[in-house]
Image (cartoon, rainbow, N blue to C red; front, side, top):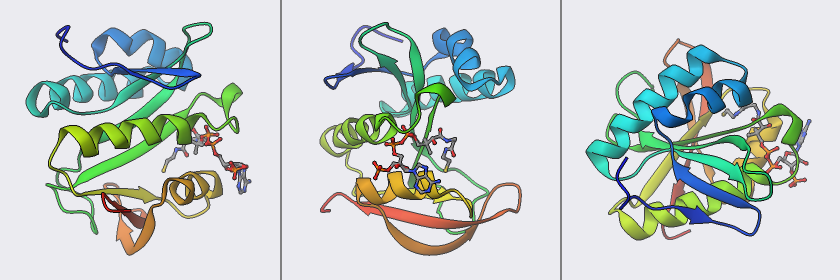
Amino acid sequence: MTSRQPVLHTPRLTLEPLSLQHEAEHALASGSAADAARDTGAAEVQWREHGFGSWAIRDRHDASLLGVAELRFAGEGIEGIAPDEVEAGWWVTERRRNEGIATEAMRVALADVWSRTGTGLVTAYIAPGNPRSERVAAKLGFVVRGPGVGRSGEPMTVYELSRRA
Ligand SMILES: CC(C)(COP(=O)(O)OP(=O)(O)OC[C@H]1O[C@@H](n2cnc3c(N)ncnc32)[C@H](O)[C@@H]1OP(=O)(O)O)[C@@H](O)C(=O)NCCC(=O)NCCS
């Protein structure tokens, strides 16, 4: 990470470019050391190569890591999302869900993508039976693009959000 990389703020949250420096905190917050290693490593490459990427969400009050606002090029393997499309995702540590954190964090992360990149459209995919995530997508203004298939062959619904929305 270089000092020129952005930091975003909301009244409750600070967002920092996700990097390997967040691996231990990610593992604590997500409960998965494997996810933490995979996601922080991939995010660091995404930021370095493209100048935007996933954000570590931090509580401004106690500085704890609360989750990740994910943004990246989708890459190969998702039916319904092209490899060169930007894909969003979100997760929040279990004890802090339903406080509006995912929505608040993604709003500023998306505003940053619109303002700093030429991206005109962001996609997301949600597996069936995840009403909380569907609600976050709806609150952010995502609309259904259609059915898709995830990297492991799982059925899911593809969403998209246009810059104009
Ligand atoms: C999905 C997730 C990121 C949401 O984070 P969050 O910070 O709790 O999200 P928000 O508080 O901004 O919004 C959650 C919304 O879901 C609603 N909700 C909660 N439980 C629900 C349920 N069983 N059915 C329908 N809606 C529900 C909440 O009321 C809230 O909507 P509201 O603001 O209209 O009241 C979080 O639940 C999570 O990390 N889940 C596990 C990982 C995951 O599924 N990630 C998404 C993968 S696509």
